[in-house]
Length: 176
Length: 333
Image 1 (cartoon, each protein chain N blue to C red):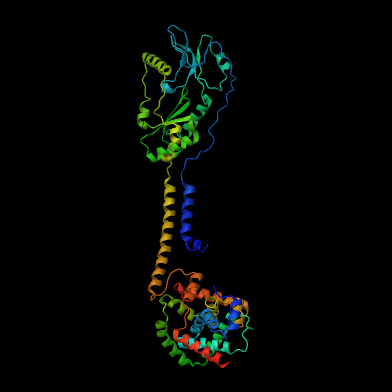
Image 2 (spheres, chains in turn blue, yellow; image 1 turned 45 degrees about the horizontal axis):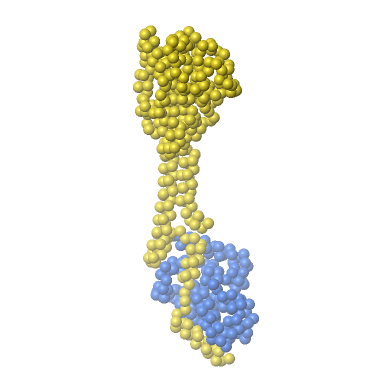
């Protein structure tokens, strides 16, 4: 069961002085944050750097107890960081990274059974991909996703359904 | 609900098979109420009047002059019709008249001379009811005059007034499936009003009713008929309704059409199940293999679960870097 808002608030309040609180926060959020970053960047090293940067940004905030939704905040931060890195990359660099990352992905992703779904998610439109990942891996509600991505709730829901449909088609052997 | 949706083709096949079975299976159902005859007037129990013998143990004595009962020579003497023919006399035979409980005994008694002795046997069915069943069977099932197509295997009927049933002979050379179906249909419709005999073929039945008579032969036959009727021994070889009801399952047969429909329905169900299992196996194999393209029936829930498990973890080295950054930030404060 994901941590509730109250627990998040406690961690955020205590983490700057309490390593255990930070460790708890890290344990709760590192995996979804890393997944979001990986699916945007397709590069493990960059994804880890992005996660690190998101935590650092959190630590550098003057106040953390004013964050209403810690989960959404961290996922939004890591997403924004990843998109920023993506924009900085040139087209050629991106292609090389992708080519390299194909092997990296094969080496680093220990779960061979999930290769297909990862590839399928990678073929979604960026917004669809992010919405799907934030909802499934980040466990954000559609309302929270709408806030993170600055979109209307109906648009978020519509794109999510579209992502579902495409993934279902791809996973069942069709073309989206 | 998801499970139901997943196996929807199997469920459709099973439902289709059951529906076909229910609609077309030839189970024995009554075609309608047993035909009722014109009810005879209800008898009012009266003290045994003179001339009536209230039980069946009476034995004729030699020399008694009594009226003769007319018998049809074309029926089995043990199941014949008993009536009154004033032109026939024979000594010293006892007159026996089988009556039912609904008979107006007084009215019948008035029809007979005072010296006639009558024997009374109480029965469940009136003579009129037996006769109505007799005619109904002949009209609908009789091989020669019925209208039931290939299932006309009733080759003879007769009324056994003493035992109070209609005897029905069915052709024993007919296919067993049809014999069973006709047996079940007759018993379901007429209940214990009938008994069924399947001891003769149509040829044997028709041959047994070819007679050549001379006067002496008639007289001899007439005497033997009356003696046989009086010294009647019930025929226990016929199939009764009780015996049929205790073994109903053996007589339930499926019509060809229903059998075909059931086979088709079951075939659809089996194919649907095989299809679902094949897709399931393909999916399992693809997942285990990991290298082949996944194929199969993925639902949205399956995909979400897969996506969730496919999420990555920060490496140990990455974790160390993050925690090192944490320590730096904490120290810098």
